[in-house]
Image (tube, rainbow, N blue to C red; front, side, top):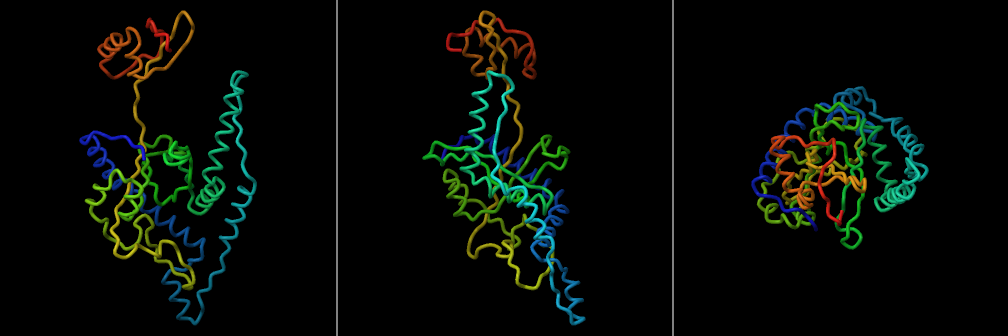
Length: 308
């Protein structure tokens, strides 16, 4: 499995910062998580509280559940996902026709290899029940005989921890988004074999027998409903918590323009330094702007190499 080896010191800083952010974000979403779990259970038939059930049984009444929510959610899902969605990228101008056709075919291909219908159905289900549904786009380096593919899948909303200061409906302004799950050590070592030693040395995430991401609501049913969270953890297995943290990174790039050909390119800092005169101009720019800002307007007098 391909991965990027990071500097030890910077990696430790990232880990410590991620753990601190996870504690802050999880404490701010406790109320929502309890309400979301209650909604999830209510939809599946666990609709009585312990006190309500005790009251009914003391009167000689059975706590029968007549579930009207589940059929309504399934009907809404059927209306939105009954037909296979089609993807169409519209060209902005005539020169974009071929690119648009490639993008349309690529999106359809991603949908097919990701079992898109099932993923979208689950995301729609989560949206109707818990108020939010997630689709996670990722690169699977093991697909296509190790060449890798871009795929997507649904994510349980209770596993997602979003910056509580975010106000955008799609979380575009979130500083961080963390996906956190519990894994057995054997499962984690199969997913990340390059970190097997660190996984073996990690402390067991002890505490509740049940998944911390899905809090207990103390709701009850007639005893015939089995929830995935009720299974709890496997016996004689050590568990660790995994974190996937997504955040924005500032990348320095330089816009260049060839006066003789009219060609414009956006170059990375390393690429910019390799062209003729680029290293000298790079030093001048950094000195003039104190390593903080990069000019984005105007033209460069670089004599670009023939390979550009």
